[in-house]
Image 1 (spheres, rainbow, N blue to C red):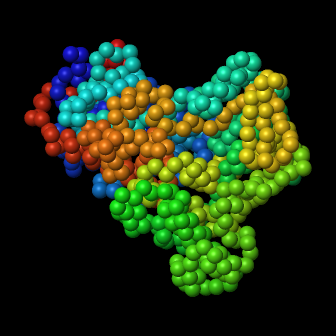
Image 2 (image 1 turned 90 degrees about the horizontal axis):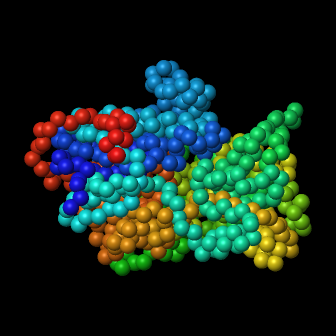
Image 3 (image 1 turned 45 degrees about the horizontal axis):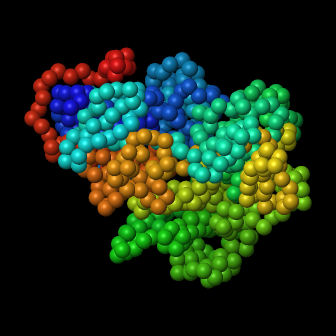
Length: 636
């Protein structure tokens, strides 16, 4: 029998993943421990090869050019009174408030983060290095808030397997270490994961290897070696979301290019000569919508209205129902988003309507299909003021351009119009729809796996890049460094010519050849095809997955489900690899964030389990928490 890593017999919890999600769970353990666990001893083991707080995605050692895509005032790791939870609220600063505290000398941090914080305003987009410093501070604060007899142990290693019976302690095996960590409970908070290549990507990689081409598969852009993309050469890029924005930045400013502002206020790009030419396309053919550049004043839409707890209860109560997203759930979401849009239009911009709000609201609630369209047509005269989600999702549908030059002009006009609209309070119904999207996501976590379309649609409308990034995109387009491919982009391997070939529905008959292809998107977080050994063995040992390949967990507390639907009493999981994915480990303040609710429920389940199975008190002296050097020495 292997020697245990914690032979004292003290109760222990192993948290695999010490990034924002693991840190948020730690904060909730600290908040709930006085009520549920008292001053009993406990070992918390955090397993992650990357530093705690930021983890892999938000680590400090990435390019200073990379930004967050949320403003500083819209980022927090702390609960508030809007969060529906059983645990206590422990207020804490948003990123903007933390930066203000750093500037005032109230929060001590290292000189680098302090310098960056000094220049950060509430509506600014922080660099990821600064967010890493904030997350590290949150982690240290959460550790300090734990009861005195709770010890935190950091293990800068990778967890590769979890074993153990449902009734007994679990063994968590770490890479390069012969003895496992023994745990009463295990929580997986591993964030975004690498994946094995699907068939199409394997075929493209094989084609590239045979012809001496460059193929970069889906990956976290900051981890990707871009050195094979040579100056001046055409590069096909498939994907127009945030991964593309990072790629764009690293291959332009990251290679010495710069921007200037002309007398007309237009941004211009000055190439360094080291940039490749990026030919970018996607299913939609357009970038994600710009972040909204104003705040909502006046009355907020009263959400939820058509997709809230009552409607979710009814969906879940259907006997033996196999819920279909498009048939059963989407109509309710469509109604909810429309309600938020028209509530704002009628209450904030009544001059653009032909009906008073109470009358419209009553008729809107009862109408559907053609009757709803007729109602909106009669009450909202300008089509630009009507919400058309299908048109938003497919903005280039049916549009055809005579040639590539016309497409470039057309898409620059589209991006310019999007920037103008998303920064004009006259279009504040857009912000109301954004708030409704957050509300919908908060309800959907109870239902589970929604399939990939919803998450992509949400990200496209609600999680796009900062406005300045799209202004840079326009400058790069005018400079010829970025060229648009259009909608319905397809990439094929041309065996005869030994190149990748891209075509799109937007410019029929035209194609673009290149010797390099970049898939600018994250891998799909499927358990069956992840490169993470722990999740693969968990799946092989009987853990359930959804139709989309996500790890199935209990909506109540995140317990991992087996294939018969039984929750494991000792194993939990939170994050994007589960069917309770919640849109992010941190959130906007005062939005009842799903991740915060999940963290609280899981923390309380952990503490209640340990309390109910508490062993006789152990009186051995315990250090508060080891230093990093001590922890590293213990791992040898």
